Image 1 (cartoon, rainbow, N blue to C red):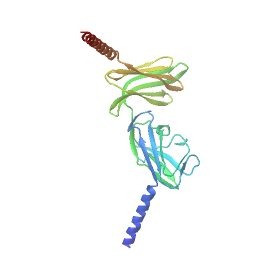
Image 2: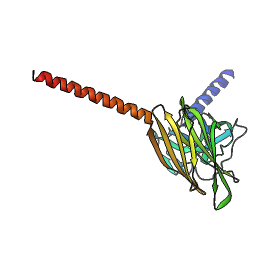
Image 3: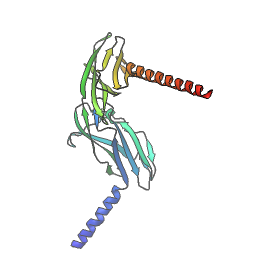
Image 4: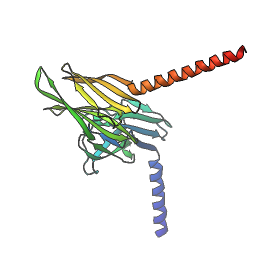
Length: 274
């Protein structure tokens, strides 16, 4: 009986392993830490090792979705949007799907803390899960704030918050945007690399033009212009600017090199006719 039980258990384990290998599912995070309101970009990867195609979409036989929880799996979040995670498609045998999407457009990620996410494929009532990935949502380190008022909407106020955080060992500057009193959170904007040697500047004009000026590195600055209207926020311009002192040194170095070159040419000409 014992031998029979061991063999049966072994066969069952092998069968489970084969089933588990029929569809491979994984999820990749763009970053391990996101600022509140920042688009949380993830990528689902599905590899079809079956002998039949996978069909996804409204009314299709297969399902692809994400599960997100706050802290642990006992606190699973409910999607706030009922639109499908992906558009309809067919995945032939042997093919692999890699599809990026902003998961914050389905789940509310506005609370600070740790989150877990996994991708799930359901085929023939069998569930295939990716390994769970963890990420953090943080407010960032506050630097400066500004307030925008709207002439025709007296009750509406828009708060702008400049914060910074390390990303891939480089400090980045972010612009957080939140409305009052409805609590609407606009997409947080990554303004790029940020040097802490200079304080960033935030200017809010009456016509809705918002300008952020900050030092990106030792050689220059970044100037970002945003149009902030009652019902929309969009980036209008992003321009790198060279530090005037650095530009002056470059010109001086160029003039010095040019003068040296001319002197050498003159000296060569003199020897030529000797």
